Image (cartoon, rainbow, N blue to C red):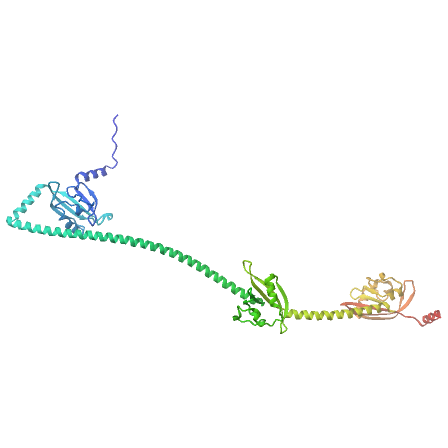
Length: 487
């Protein structure tokens, strides 16, 4: 079974390739300097490599016959986009000649190859070339004239050749100079890159320095703020504070210290013991050195020469890393408290004197209360309850003390005629003084006696009471009977 031929996918592309390779004239695409970029067809009849270093420039590779006229046509073509044609150029080939038309045109589009130059070589039949030559020969006037023209042409050719060689030499020198400039440019670029790298490093260092500077500014600002806060805090407490170093030299002080120790700003750094002070504290230096030695704070109340009092506290100055770096002295004024303390002491002494006098008075009153021959009852002014009763009344009436104390007077049967109820007691409260003469009472054994009853209200140790005095009335007959019995 015969295989089916493969279908040609891109027939148009293959046809274009065959057309270019077999039927299109040879051509080359060069840049503005004449360097060959692309070759189409067979160009060996028109161009040949030169001996020595490889050179793909069309001017150097042009064969004999094209070498003189091609540069001029190339220069003309570079000035515009119209084609420049060299006709019937006799080109020397390997052992023969070939007539050719050369078309040079600068490319305007497409944009990707704009500015490049296309050089097209079109072979011309030898017959046309022969007719052209014959026509030129017939136009000559004579052979002498032709020889003269040939000589001029030869000289012109030699001049042109010399000029071309000079141009090539200049071009080579320019190339060499250009290479040197390129080398210098590369070195400058390398130096520039190094400088750029150094600049970047410097910028990086500058940024780091700026960051550090910002951090330092922030720390300085925080330090200034903290210093201001501490100063305002110390001044707002109104506590005089003195900071000393380990050698007892003045490091810092608050404004309140000036009223105690005669300090000024220039005194910072001086020993504080050299400064005049109002304190009556001669051992202050000894105590300060003891605190540095033992790290135990000292606190004392000291009086000044102008009768002010200060509570002085000497403490070790500790740093953030717990290192002792001097002392802190605080002076808290306690003049008012000290004066109050003295006043309290005087008041307490006066109170003690009064208490002693009151105790003596109370002792005397108690002795009188218990030894008097009158019956006495003490009532609570508000409640009417019996607070106390003296021994004479207990003996007179024959009742026990328990039958009297903590009972309302109207609850005691033998007093009902005097104070029958709460309303009667209220009347007794309002009058505050009541007197009854020849008032009958019944004793515990049923005996009838007449008494004088007197009550009056007064305050005792901030407690208002009513004192009732009961005195037995003895008749004249009773006195005589008593006398008779005695006799």
